[in-house]
Image (cartoon, rainbow, N blue to C red; front, side, top):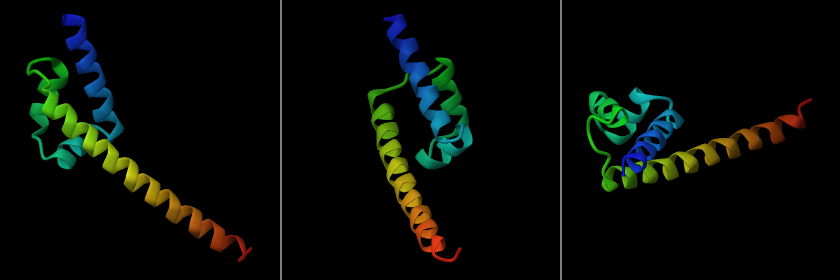
Length: 83
């Protein structure tokens, strides 16, 4: 059970870093930075609901990153004829 809790904390901390850290994650999910640090440090349990919200935010981030990449590809494609 303790190993499972540690795995959950470690993975949650990894997800927070994917967003660019505690501040960015806090803004994205609307959660106080101190609370996020407490989740990562094991001072507060990470609920299934928090993990579900994190997964949803990750899916949204992927969609935003994919759209941004598409815009870059379009710019580069249209710019290639300018060379």
